[in-house]
Length: 378
Length: 204
Image (cartoon, rainbow over all chains, first blue to last red; front, side, top):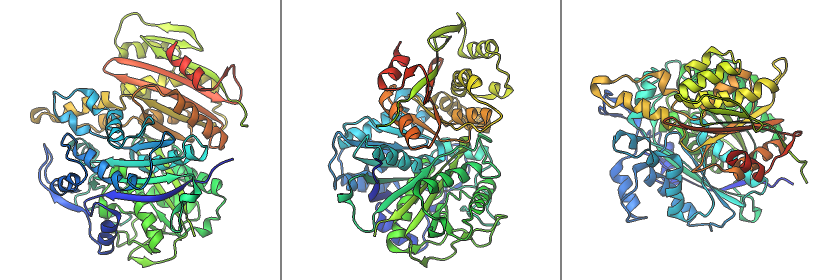
């Protein structure tokens, strides 16, 4: 017997605010976290969505007086703290942590012991701070990590391995990642423009996001989300570019729908990946068209937050959940004219619209893709 | 009650040697990982030039998997084999190499072909591409080998019909220290698939 799995609580820490309410208000005003930043290492000035360290330190001081945490660790703890305070951690509680690069900036110090940069060490530090008793599960699957972490937690809860789970995701802007995307010539010279005809690459960002998931239906209220299905399928095509046919994404979405039994016509909204590279956005449009989803309203939140790597899938799910709760679609910032060859329904302006079912997708290096289908509990 | 699952094949690479289903098959007495990997590639008759462009983690994961998959995959049909891999050091071996390429103003050479390997799941991509495995995949990181998680996750992929078979792997590589244990979980086989047997593959 498979159990139902729900998301009841959400939080996020981004340049637009340190909780969901402040983020939502900023999105409604059309604000973006993306700004022009000065030289970093050998990089000339660049656009990125960066959290102000002073504001972060002030907010963190409200939670803990300890000073030995990195910026990323503070973001993760701030994202989790208000959610954890509402629930009890038991030996049947999973702690799932998703990140692409973790504390990679520690490597900038040549005297750094490599163990300090281990993702498991970072997970353990957060886990110890909150008193989790189970071994942290770290998901590190490139840019799908954040949404894959939800699928992984859902699968473990569904089969009764755990009763509930805290899922947290975070990544920061570092010279390591900036220089890497730059070497790929994948960085946009202006704030990114997902799906637009003038898009020319990604803008990087940093954020942390967290959700509480449970298989206990007595914890669930109206407006919470039930997870209906998921899929995380590889393109098997290229390690640094998506499949032109969108095969992995197509199959991931197909797998999520098959599990859910939901008719695709019922879908109200797709929160897509939309990195604003030529190939990614085009590939998504192809996959959505192959599935007959080209008329479903779709957006990318990268114009507000940049590409927050392993955090993006979870952050964008947190915002999509807020959209569903408020029945309000957020306009896809940076988009003005259709720039993909197969037409899709990109949301131009904020629009009120009843949202009962939505899909979150992501794709990344290594040919990975993930899709998760959500239903609003009514 | 769910039907039993079995480990049908397994391959272990450590200390410059390869064992298949518990039987030692190849060893190179002295030599770096790169020399060992090249010798093993030749010994097992693998013909895949892309292998030589891979980073060390991908070479290790690819070799250990290929020894199993070349006997199992039927290229004439779709093979629904999920890949569930994990390790301790993520991609830190290549991360450190990439970091040194941007650390110094006088020797600043960030290379996209190195940067792409600064993600641990790239090794899964390499294996999927070789056998056109358009199937479920995920990469995890743990402080140490986690037989409980690996067996739970493989079981639930099979029980929820997300995959027909699951190729599981612990693929750890950092600075010439390496160990890989890769095994195929399916409905038939000799070894029963559970936490204890998975642990035995790793420790024996």
